[in-house]
Structure formats: structure tokens, C-alpha cells
Image 1 (tube, helix red, strand yellow):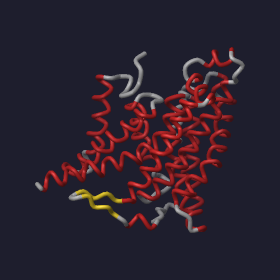
Image 2: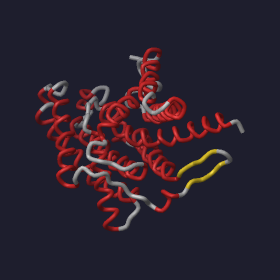
Image 3: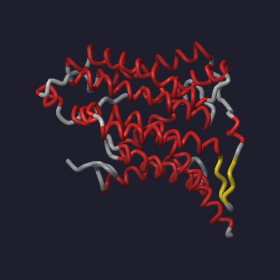
Length: 293
């Protein structure tokens, strides 16, 4: 087989696996930013905090990091409900969520980063489960389980969330509160309670993404800053609040970044990937799976 074709196929495969990580990072943001219109700029930092806790607990107990991440989902859900309660009380109910609410989440992000540095130091942390050293070879294509297994967990989490949103009463209420909170009040449903529950889910998904992250690559307290632009880009490109669109956009973003880095160098990959975002929005301002206003 032609060497350039082999390089391209491996670049596409690695890009799809990288897209699985982006999907894990962006699916929680698709709930808070896409459905609730809450610009949680601290979401990647919460994901990194989850990754650090996964390393600490996984090392202490000898558990698989992805299992630890799933177990951390409940504490992070409770953390998310607490953060939303503060945000709603001081900003949202007064109509100050646009600018002051954004500043609140910036503050949360920096508090998390400084807290991680004080608690764990600036060093990188990571975990290597047994499958991290296994690579499946399919002809000329290499598929490292270090990236495949976290990606499969991300797809399972997004699939479960999609079924919950489509098939349960609470899930339908979450979709409704994003469109017309007053209509929910007329049905004797408290929109604040629904938004608190949904925001808790988004932070729980950050814990799952943190477990995926520490398997794929080492993390440090400032690692969340690397993902801020990417996760918001994936969420916007997919269509605000569309989980299938989030998955497709994550794969597109991962493939474009990785193929560009393979053939033209890593310094070009972010520019080309965000260029694709602008191209998509030029022809579909609502995103890949978004609905036109």
C-alpha cells in the first residue's frame, strides 16, 4: 500500500479516536451551554479536576480510571447542583447572567486551577491501565486501546443521556425549559429545579470526561485551558444542544486536526480545524444538526 495512503488512514483513525475524547469533553457542555444557555466556561476545568481525583482514587484503590470516573459522576452531579444554586441565586434570577454570570464561571475556573496547584502541585498526573499498552492492528491501521476504550465510554454516556432526554418526562422537561420556561410554570413544573438537575448532569459528565482524559494523556492543573476553545467549537458546530451533532462535530474536529498535524505539522492543526468551524457556520449558522430559527 502507498505510504502516504497508510499515513492518511492512520491519521483518520487517530482523528476519530481523538474525536471520542472531544465528544466526552463536549457532551456535558452541550447540556449546560446548548440546552440551558449557561456559558459554563469552567466546564473543562471541572473535567481536569475530575481527572485529578480519578488519578488519586484510582492509584489509592487500584481501580480502573474509567470505573472511578463513573463512580465520581454522583459527587460531581451534587457539585453541579450546588454551583447552579449559587449561580441562579446571585445572577440568573436577577437577570445578570449575561456578563456577570460569565465572570462567575471564570472565577470558578481560576479557583479550580489554583486549588489543583495547591493540592497536587504543578506536575502532570496520569494513569496507565493494562489496556493502555495494547494496540490492535487492522491491516495497516493501528488502533490503540488507550484511546478506543475512553471513546467507547464517551459514546455510551452520550447514548444514555440521549435516551434519557428523549424517553423520560424529566428529559423532555429539560428540552422544554430551554425553549419556554414559562410554559413549564403553567404546567406546575418548576423550571429552576429542572435546570438545576440538568446542570448537575452536565457536571457529572465532566467527571466521566476527566476519567477519559487521564487515560489518553497526562493532565496538569492548566490542561482545561487547552480544551476551552475546542469544546465550545464542537458544541457550536454540532448545533446547540444536539447530542448527535456533538458527536459528529467532535469526529470532524478530531479528524481535521489530526490529519493536518500528520501532513503539515501540529502548529497548523488548530487553525485548520477552527477554519472548518467557520466554514460550517458560514453555510449552516445553526450548526450541523441545529434547527434554523
